[in-house]
Image 1 (cartoon, rainbow, N blue to C red):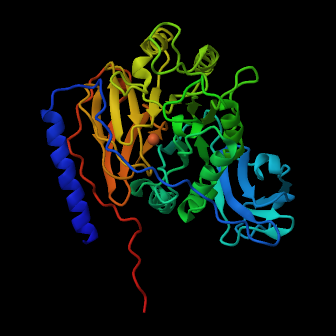
Image 2: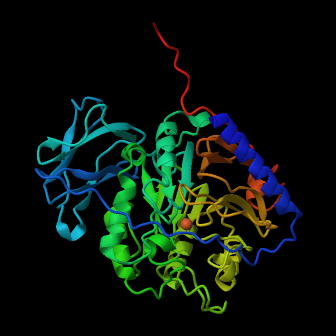
Image 3: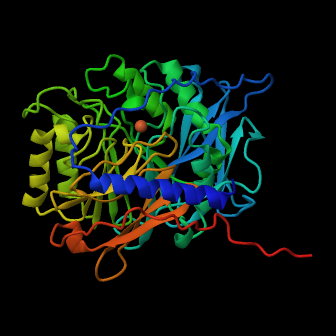
Length: 483
Ligand SMILES: [Fe+2]
């Protein structure tokens, strides 16, 4: 089958589903039964080769601010290491920053914090173990973020659910790595948010989690993508513990320790309140990356005032941060969905916490809120209570779940590897926001601008045409052959 025929088949199958969906009686309360599936064999890592230590995974760029950057590695054995960094592609102007200790107790992972950088500047870097370079020319590079508060345009890629095998999301990583610097029209982006189910170890056991994190990081596409792109992550159930796990989960402290080993976020939780949550600002956009698992009440608990997804301390932190924020857009990202008709593992069954929080946002006249989520193995956009916009993105690599009728949804797609890009521009008199939905191997499914009034419930949002059609934007611009 040719690629064209394959895509035509995809489009036809989507059309059939979309018709069935609109013809069905809306019943958002029960997900359809999942087909029985054979569990994948546990992931394993290649054996460590004899000789001197080398990079088992990484380098990966984590948090990048206007003046600092974080570079993560996993080495095959304890070893002194360093990062050389400079603005010249050949590192003629480089300085060398020693990395923190790489030890067996941290699975030989470490994150170097590089300070004293200039905002909006392109840097090249090289990782050395002892004096042996682990990255070769052309060296990996990244761009520091604009100054906090500065107006500008930024494109934010986000998604979830990488799939159960190392191969599941490998194609998505390779395509994202290709598109990263191809410009706005070809799906380029400035940073990547991983919104949970970043592996499917389904346990709090440290050794298995470390293997699963690393297995995904060995794919060529991920290595390319993450060596150049600031990557930020929160978790959802499968990379926190078992399916639909919550704050009662034994061993959650171990999950948090491993999470911190494998991501290079700016921070995690607060001194008195553990968790993976944190905030960071890029220009005049502030991100609130939330932990919906560590303090979560069980999904099955009665929906009373005590039932919580975030825990009182995290929610109080979030409110404090929102009140203090001067950002034009405030991006609130969680693994679970925020919308009213979500699954039995979403905020829809935590209404006694959700609804007062949403009301509080309006009482405090906080503007520019956008909700992000993942988890569902399809991508969709919602107008929650005809007031707030939520964009739910995924899966990078997991098998799909089907969209179901939902009165709050105004767009969606549920076939293939999917991710979204938020395109924000605050340079004009009115802040601009558009979202894009991308299909791995299929191109842009939808780009849609939402007005400030739509983002604030003052103007309705009409449903997008269904089914969305892939446009097959080329992965690479054609290069004329020379004789
Ligand atoms: Fe998932």
